[in-house]
Length: 281
Image (cartoon, rainbow, N blue to C red; front, side, top):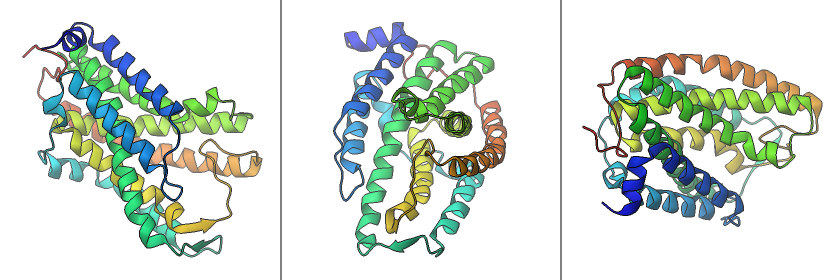
């Protein structure tokens, strides 16, 4: 065990918080490396670096590919992925607001690579690093398990809008409300995916769920030209923002069952659960 691994086991929360923060800062300042407008190069580089950080902290077994628990994970995710599939089908229907790209067949494999890299990067940061750091300290009891999952999930939710708030892109009250709703929705998603990870003890199940959801969510934007202005945190159009707020209120409500599913998965998890950042049995 090297000095870095010893330090990570002695101060797990501080170590993973520092590692996650540095990774997100690096991601923010990296130049966009894209293929036909899809930043697959940037995400691929961050996926590689985040895996390297986990290996440096002693998580070799953590990143070893496995299909263990795959059936249980996909069964648990059927509601979540079903919602995204329905939205995907609706977005692919001809509505007159966009035209099919001539190179759409080429863009789909690029999208597949992109969502794979995004899944690896984000799950590495928020589950393999942050969640494991909290579990190394609090994973002895069920309440500690729940607390660790909540903390990492809130971080997962916040990071999705943090750059928009810090950059000054949020300039109105309706944009701020939309941002907060997105934090809540992503926290719900993070709680569920984190629970799947804890229950199956396999980060690749979390990555698979993440990438399937992102693929369906981004498919229509990938294959269609559209004149519709889009921003993750809303636009200067008040009417558009209000419609987005209504949509996200519905999504937050629809994601509530994910909390119940995640809670049930946690209740069935054997304790203690310290993760790879602890030497305790």
